[in-house]
Amino acid sequence: MMKLEDIRREYTKDGLRREMLKDTPVEQFETWLQQAIDAKFTDPTAMVVATVDEHGQPSQRIVLLKHVDEHGFVFFTNTGSRKAQELKQNNKVCLHFPWHEIERQVIVYGEAVPLPISRVAKYFLSRPKESQLAAWASQQSRPVSSRQALMQTFSSMKDKFAKGEIPLPDFWGGYCVEPTKVEFWQGGEHRLHDRFMYVKQADGSWEIERLNP
View 1 (cartoon, rainbow, N blue to C red):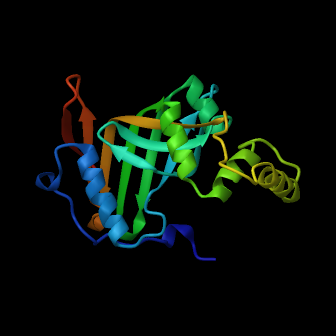
View 2 (tube, rainbow, N blue to C red; view 1 turned 30 degrees about the horizontal axis):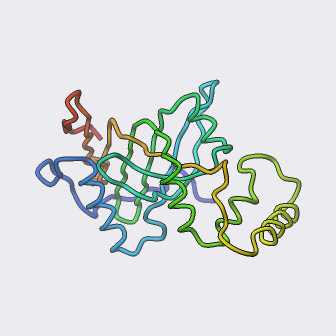
View 3 (cartoon, rainbow, N blue to C red; view 1 turned 60 degrees about the vertical axis):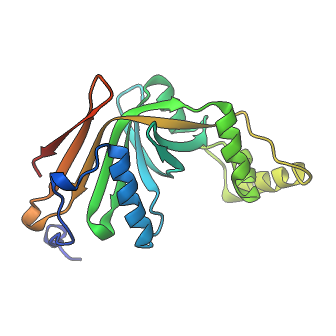
């Protein structure tokens, strides 16, 4: 096996300068996201969501971004899941978009605010039927005896909701992560990366500062 310390490469794709940045982090994010989509990345909306439990232990998982606007970054989940339970006692959250193919990262720091039921229902009903059934079948983050047991529950739900519209589970919800800081990272040669941090001010405006690599 190759020595891990010998695995390295130079980052030469692009550079990032202050004059290239948009006025707000959401505008800048939308520009980069569209470029990731245009480059035909696999799962360009995939993001790592980091939360912390009551003991200060961080945990992470990958979810898909479902909407972004001036208010923040939206995702949906089972409200009984580990992340949802951790957000109940500490709603501070960190999102990470690792776009390795173009040597970019975006890191979002903020607070997760629950979405109204009307918005959750609208999204849930837009999902494929099999995904709706899977939401009903899974007690997310809890132990399950086997794959077979999970599939049996899925089959039961399929029979239960064979006719008509599948209703919104009372344990399904969503969050908008309202950002307070957003970092844009562009890889650079010799590890001299370009990093810019948007910091939200008291009046709602954004201040941009360059960070050392």
